[in-house]
Image (cartoon, rainbow, N blue to C red; front, top):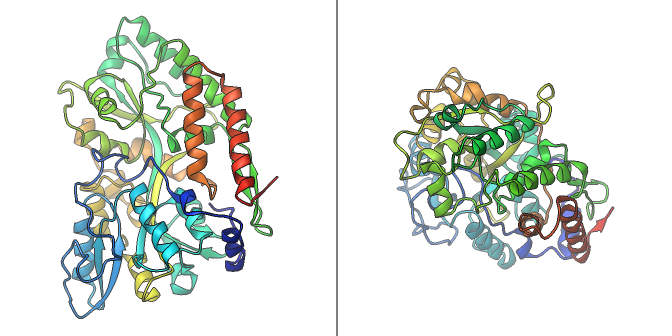
Length: 467
């Protein structure tokens, strides 16, 4: 999102050009523990009424204090809310779960259209921020002390949540990618841990040749942000925006990086070396924990998702390693998922709302809850760079310090990514094209070319000038 620029009037121009509520609704959620109810918190959704006195899931500790309504679905979030309310006398959080991902975004879109009903603060995945910014759904936090916390985040992360000179969300968690693998399956087949994608393909063939019925991994056609991250690693830069002309967009969805990745995976599919199951379904989860796949290419929230699934093989030996690279001497780190707190344009008290967005995950105590109970990967540097987080041992991985070994380096090396204001449509068409290619209806080059044409046509129909 960091390349989107333009004034408030420019964004209104985008709305007038035809930006609709449907454009902001996303499907597969990819942060904070996964995309389905299996990986999400078990808290039931409270009424999506913007909070209000009757809409709080949590207990208000100081009844006379200013209340800030918050929509969020973070795992183990109630403990974080209680900690904030116990340590703030002037401001209290009234939290409700308006649904996860798509459900929340649909409700928020409805409140934008109606001009009422939105919470003061809302949890949003980073990829959907542009869609709500251009509809004037979010406040610029520059005037409310955003600069006071900027030093607590890496430049790339901060840029992902900024728009020109404005800041529209406070980062919370991210999804730098690594590789979780079954050491016991690797050992039985004599497989070394792959460090490059060429070695990964060799490992897939080696596993098959060993006589095992285990697939090395799953290439999920509904992976959306997962597949886009793999494109990104190969050098794809799908979107560019011009701040002087915010209704113009460059779309490059059929570049060399995209085609390289698609053809690589389609070759493995054609050879029967990887599965093509839909991700995050019951069947997928069962195979993940029972030995159907030997590798889970995962974001940093993946270990928590994996460890939280039922039916795990008691003899499984899981370990974590860096994501394979195209060029081991020039590693490229990528991100799958991530989220932030934004202040909505309907906030009753923007200053109090901004304080909540800045401070709710602004302490070590809050992050201890988020990490140990919610399996979040922090973007807040004081905890991200702490000895505690670096040296944290994970029992599920045999005591391995997976942050030190894998995810910290992946996070540090992540340079940011530019999402489009029609990301959901692009992701939907990506899913269609990848599925068609996996079914043998077209090769990777044709799938990428068709995707490019579909998204260009759509952007043009919505009033964008496509360069």
